Amino acid sequence: MRNEIKEYEAVAKAAEKFVKSVAEGNSEYAKTLFTDDAVLFGILDGAVERGSIKQFYHNVDTVGAGDDFNARIDVLAVEETIAVVRVLEEKWGGRIDFTDFLLLLKLDGEWKCVAKAYNQNSNTIKE
Image 1 (tube, rainbow, N blue to C red):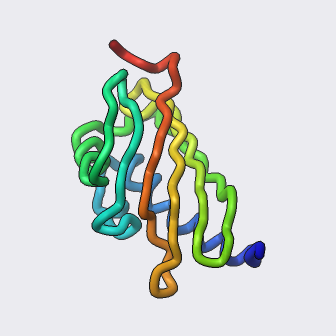
Image 2: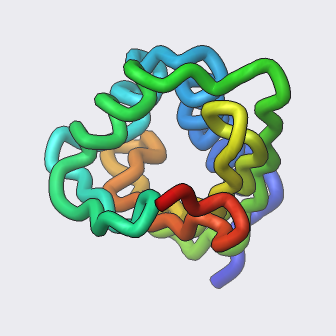
Image 3: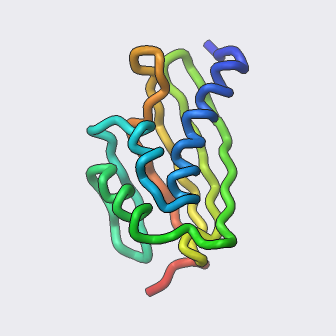
């Protein structure tokens, strides 16, 4: 069953914590979004990243977003207790474009992210 628009807005607001962390180079905002056991999957500059979301926190805290960083949040689906969000990122660290997919669950009335998978745009891969 499709949720009301206000629920889409709540999911987008939750995802803003992700974008704020990336934009400011401070994982503290994202730590309020992700569950402690959230997972990460993706390939960064040809190296597979998988496992704990703590790797994402490390990346955010050690690489500044850069002055030209830009992001867009698209709430793709909200179905009662699950949501899928796509975040487009441009110029992270001054050079990398990402497409992130966040999987959120509504836990105790709050939208929490349990998984992040991403693609690095091929024209931004540095070998």
